[in-house]
Length: 303
Image 1 (cartoon, rainbow, N blue to C red):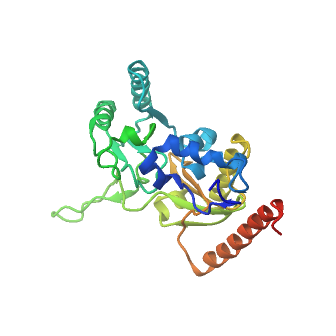
Image 2: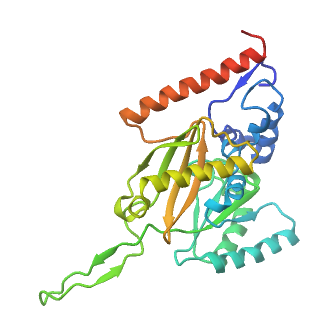
């Protein structure tokens, strides 16, 4: 790209494919060589954590809106690894809400290079980390390499089950015994909602959570306001690096009556399409990239 007159990157997380060859850190360093090269993204926006896929980066920057998260360091010295595990145990003891924990990786989409693991407790976490350092098939797209050869860190979060619902007990064979209510640990109804934003303003939410999920406990206005505030916080704390002037998406779920951000995406963020949102999104994106490209060409005196 540096040999071209200008560069334009239209997709999020170009590193996802490059990382299968280089690893995440070298890939980020290569992308940042474009900082002063004419194009988009460039400058500070190359450090956008959603664009780069640095999930730890945006979870820290928007921590007020995100679920408690612990950074599991890989490729560390023995002393650092032991201290990190000791702190991980404290995190597990404090943030296990009865459903276990989730271990996942940054710098990948849809678990492409690292399938997320469900962890019951600290003992299982310790065993899992040791296995990731020794198992050559720990990273799915790198059969000959270990997961720690691809990723510098993993993320540990409390596992949030789908919202419990009340269900009636089945009647006994003896007859019309009055049914009683009990709490189901898991339900078939998803808890997550994906909110699409144009220029930082919420447009619509795609959700199938129903009454038991986030839309059953919060109004659309509350969800939109929460997502817009999360985007503002991320943009503010990254000093404008977060690319939110175009299309972005916030995945939000609810737990204990509160909403939490699960993930931020931008640029090529996917969303369920309908006739209305697809047409409005297409018009918005065409105008957005036209302005970006025209601005780049004018700066380079090409037009």
